[in-house]
Every structure is written in structure tokens, then in C-alpha cells.
Length: 303
Image (cartoon, rainbow, N blue to C red; front, side, top):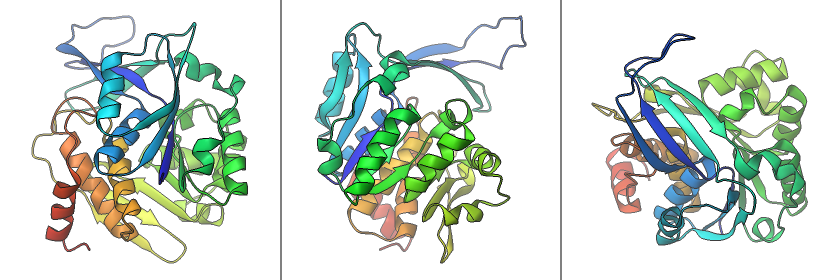
């Protein structure tokens, strides 16, 4: 396998609102829909659909839906390490989105809340080139990255929104020092600087070799000690749902990395993939083919 993806596999219940209600008030929703989601579920399914061989490593409840499992298998995801845990419900995220595409989410963690009590399987680490660490508990992931580092694997650290409430400065910096790549958006970048007491993301390059930061519709940037690469965003006239856009970017990024493309082309592949995903509701609903991504890369001058 090229990749092992660790993180949440959950159901997303997306509630579209005209606006967020004030405290102690209520508001009528525009609509409510159920989608497949989770940081690891999104990245794994999208990267696999784009031709990347990978393991999905996560914990779900005994009620994990068969239609979600079938969708993962249909894209070629190896789900041998996606484990149902008795006594738990599958992680579920309720996402409230207003008309400006701002979001507020609440999360039932299911067994992921207690994953520090589980022992990581060694096989996905041994048999992958890249270990992608998304959302989940730092204590569990420290065991994963310690093993991965001893085996000489590349490690990508992508804590997402959980950086704000699961991690603390010490646990964040401990994980960062094991990583080769750090993924973040603008808000997570600011939190990383707060935790590390640094003023610029480039200051973190003393701890991690590559930083990939998404910037919403403005694009993304990739930082290394040698250069800063800016990748323009792909314009979408009427984005419908930005849920999972960052995960889609990572899925496209890995599909290009697997094929040995440059970091700049990896970022562009991520942007192209994310632009397709946000055209419809749900983070896994409109996954492009690798042929589509490759054609668009060539049209933009990437090789």
C-alpha cells in the first residue's frame, strides 16, 4: 500500500440554516440530509477513487451502515482495519451551515473517544509508505507515529478542527516533531502558532519538513525550507457545500503524490478535486476520476 489513513469515519448530518440562531433561541432549518463523512473516511474514499492504494484505519460502532461500507469497498478501500466496536454507536457529526457557508459542528465521537484504550495494529504501518494521521486521540497516535518513525515511514499530521479542543500545546508539538508533513487551514495554522509560541508558519519548519495550508477559495500554499509554493484556487461559480473540501484536497494531493508528481502539482490536484466536491452536497458525493484531475492538471501546465 502507498497510504494508511487514520481518523474518523462517521455520518454527517448536514443542517442548512438561513442563519445561526442567537443563544437561547431557535430557528427553522431549510433542509437536513445524511451523508458519509469523517476525516479519514473522506480522505480514504476520495484518494482510493483517484487510484491510490490504501488502508483505512478507524473505529466505528456496531451500527456502522452497510451502505457506507459498500461505498468504501466499491472504490477499492482496504477496510480490514476499519473495526466495529461493540457497545458504541458509529461516530456522528451534526453540521450546521448558514447561507454564507459558515459552519458549526457538534460531534458524537463514538469509540473514537476511547481509542487511547485500543492497541494499534502494526500491519498498516509496516505495509504503507505514508501514514496520514487525521482526527483522533493523541495518545493513540503517539504509538502509531513512534512505530512509523522506527520503520522509516513518512508521516503526515492533519489534526483538523480537533487541534482546537483535543490537542494541547505539548501534545501538538510532540506529534509535530514526528511529522514530515503538517496539513492545516488558516484557523488551524493560527492555533499551531499559538501552541508553539511562533509568529509565522515558516518558523515551524524547524520541526516539520513540509507545511501544506489550504486558504479556502484563495487557494493553498506549500512551505518548505527551500521555497514557498502558492497554488491558486479553482473557481467554482456557485459552491453548494464546502463540507469536506479540505479532505478532498488531501485526497487529490495523495493521488498525485502516489504518482510521483511535484509538490506543486500535488497541491493543484488537491484544488481540482476539492472544487468538484463542493459543487454538490456531501463530502463524498461528487468525486472526480483521476483522468479528469490529470486532464485539468495538464491544462494548467502541470506535469
